[in-house]
Length: 146
Image 1 (cartoon, rainbow, N blue to C red):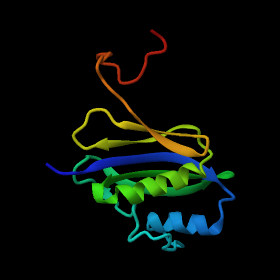
Image 2: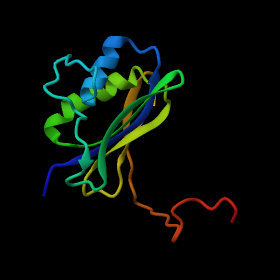
Image 3: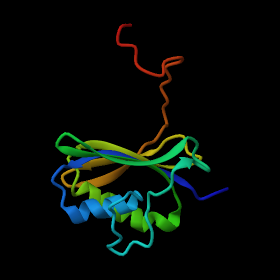
Image 4: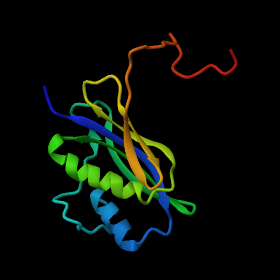
């Protein structure tokens, strides 16, 4: 058994984010123009390619879209990284323009993730419980025309 978790984030940041904040974020994503700082030992979201335990691919993307930056991250995480991950996610929460669900955190063997919700300048984790499962057999997406 491994102690691997999946972290997924998808959120927007203001286009006018300070250059030093943008450089730190770019460093964590292992993108050109980044700079190390704020006491992190290594870039948290530098992995790319096939995931070892969570399936799918590991990504870290940052793109300017209109007046905002669009950030998407999907990475494997180990408990030894949790303090740094908590710090960077809260840092993003204080800066994001996105309100509501911005991602999730999941133990690699778990069926339900913990939702990450941004509001009022912070991010909180909501633990989802599946005591009652409502299954829509054969429907991966809702059928709005049924």
